[in-house]
Length: 176
Image 1 (cartoon, rainbow, N blue to C red):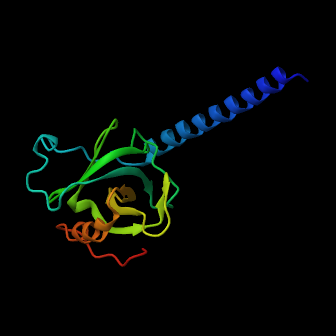
Image 2 (image 1 turned 90 degrees about the vertical axis):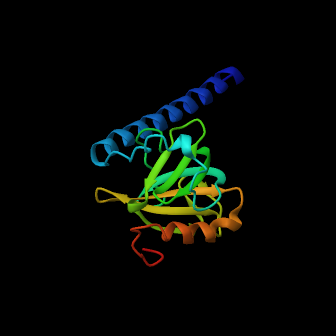
């Protein structure tokens, strides 16, 4: 077997595996689209009013992913919610906005927030320690965890406390 033949075989195997991963992700998105509710839309005009009435200064970093309550690796594949992106996190009295670069913004209304905490990781970003700020929220009986890796991790405790203090946020013991 020549070097060229061996190289072509390795390339074919790589392309086959990449294609299978793409098919798996696409099929996950189809299955989830049938059972998951529509995600909340960003309120009209909110993106134009950012900076007004925010409870904390915006936090820059990386939106890691949103996962279902089945596990920290069960990434939501519907739409572009599963895609990692640089983002700015905004905390408003009415909810949280993940303003993602190159992807649609993710809006979590205050009444949907269940808890906020730090974790070692979430699908798409594992840092160890308290490397990721995780917001647990619910809509239509489904719970989700959304992970955010901030540039300034020293702000996590302030953010977790402020998110838990949003109106209509029930107290949930850590770890549930």
